[in-house]
Length: 419
Image 1 (cartoon, rainbow, N blue to C red):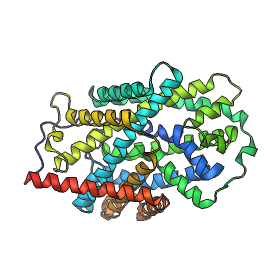
Image 2 (cartoon, rainbow, N blue to C red):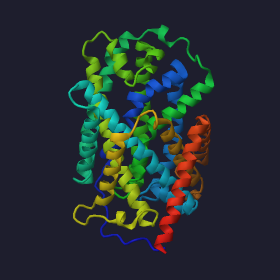
Image 3 (cartoon, one colour):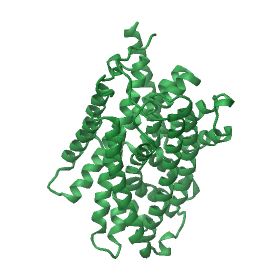
């Protein structure tokens, strides 16, 4: 089937700094401010090892995504690579799982923003703040990709400043006794925690979906992915060590706001409020990048007829897929006012692991002259994804596979109507 015609092209306006900012803005969010506590409850202080494992796995996956993005600099990320290098069904599976994961996470992150805002401003209902965040992120995505990138940079700078304060002021309060027992639930729990924490690194996937809007994508996207991942890994390890060293793993596991709990134990009154503000801006940055990445995935899938054709429209004056942005914002708004954090985290981790499994399979199919990294990098990423996915609860795996089946049924119905 011939893809629907494009009315205009996306504009290449993002440079390296904006791309790194978007990567960091997508990574620093629920991962560092929420999942840290969940992982501490699963693995104890050894969740720091889980952070390193997840970071290593994310690096292998990121390198696979980077070389694919350099070869195929179009919107869609692994959806595009799967279509070209594997099979149309594999491409659709990647795109559908990306949408499922990121749309669910968008609603969850918005709700997280609402809870943090309510902590600072008790008069503001969390759901109202969540709705306002989604509306803000949606409107910010219609002002132009370059302005969106610069706005995201400001958010990232504030978030990093709050985390730097946490590390700097908390390091003196670390107690070695809080690191014992090191792995109270065994090493299988460490692997399980790494699967949850892998979700905390996966924001860099947004960069691959922006292949048509980055200047010199063959070099900019790989550099931005690697830089985002390594900055995130170093910050995560430092923040995790301070958090568990000051509050202890059991205390972190008992709260949705583990860094706020840890900061409250510091000898610096008011620092926990700084962490709340940093968490709120981080959630806003993630939401901003999610609307950006989801709308570009919708654009790519609609071009091939895997989503309704009207989503393939690009506004000729602004060079933006405004319809896809509007639909993304509407769905995220609906999920924000009805969603729950507990019901999303594990499912989102499984769906994104399927996405990256397909990324690595596509990287292994690259011709030798198009490879930037040796095949063992993709093999390591693939095996890590399978190991982490297998460590999740059977009900989580079953629900993820059911979601995938639902996607193929939707695709079959859509294609039937297009004939």
